[in-house]
Length: 151
Image 1 (cartoon, one colour):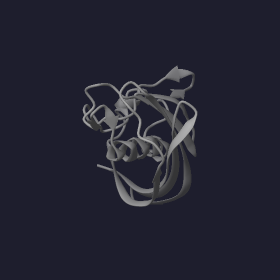
Image 2: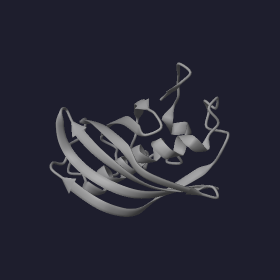
Image 3: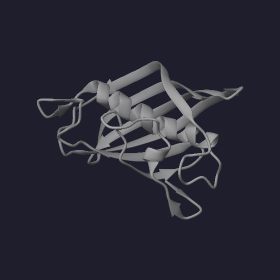
């Protein structure tokens, strides 16, 4: 993530920590879209027989999507994630199609777009679409509703 030409560590803006952090890099984000990367390492808790499970794919999509709306809760000059504290929830899974399950050491690239957003008193309710790729192959297509709020 970059603001004013400076790279930002996404881990400072997501409440997730290992072993639940499923985004390792965010090469692009703006007000309506985001691209994240996640390398599946052997110690990942969403692995079963070296295959990344469906729940991990959905959580990766949710963490990716939350970056779009979540960034608006922070000051523009905040590079450390200290100007606010937020939490996000998947409020509904509207659609999930999983075409393949990735394996250990695969790199996932997830691209998400904001479909709609409603803000009220420090809470954002939003719908986002997300596509996850392994190499150039689409492996997940989903639409999620998320609730993001200040705490």
